[in-house]
Length: 332
Image 1 (cartoon, rainbow, N blue to C red):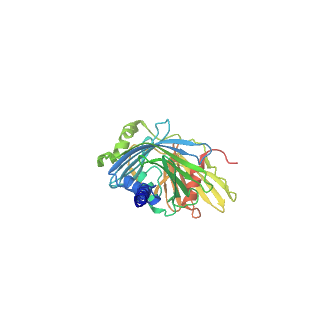
Image 2 (image 1 turned 180 degrees about the horizontal axis):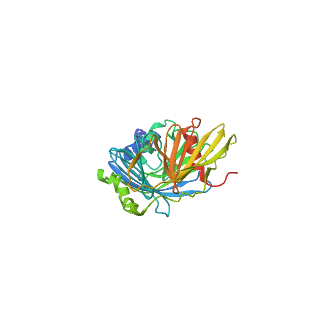
Image 3 (image 1 turned 90 degrees about the vertical axis):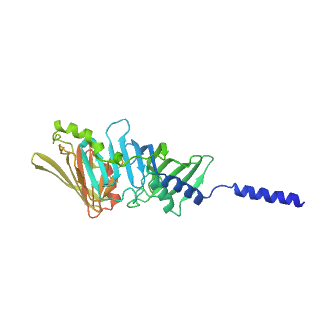
């Protein structure tokens, strides 16, 4: 009888030792693996569903400790590319095809959620004590809060982690209705890969375009007007006018109501030299491009055009919403 009881006790202890990992244990393992690697390279596909039609982008990320980052984003199947680079000199957004480089005094990528940077995903998990973990035979799935500038439009994310590799396989960023708005599907993730400081120099990404600049002048000043397609019931377009200066055109749209703002747009003027331009604020991911956001404005370049939205009434998240909706169209 005593022997049988001893066997039962030993079996119970064994089963307890082999029990399922708790949420806190998994998060600790994930944080250690994703944040303590000396460097990594990864590739991913990003689908953005915030516009009228889904848009898909290829994303490639380099990270070398402590604070070197390089994120390359381009529309799937196209060669046009933008890069966010963090090196010893600061944070830069580089658009090689436009020969434009913006420099920021920014803490990017630390201050907000960045779904394609695995270190910030680990930070998100550590920051949300209310994160919920579910699992099946192969995957841990976490549902948790994002750390965005204003958690109104995209407040929730789901992070899926492979149980064997303990690496992320997919991240979904959700709106308040739990509809997927941004989906990151990870491809290959190589931990332990490091690059030299020289590999993060901004000049490496612009020097090819500089050589082409000798035969490139100002773009065509004739252009179609872009409008925001966001539908705010109590905010309407009240004025639209064009200003011409030194042969260049600029269109200014004024929206008034509960959420007033001004949208300015003009063709990009190409310079013969690629010099970094200081931009206040932080890099802002609009899905289709990367811009610069402050408390009261947002600026970005796309399709040979430069855009600027200013408002003292809109939150940062609302500025992002308006900017993400701007497209070549006619007002209703």
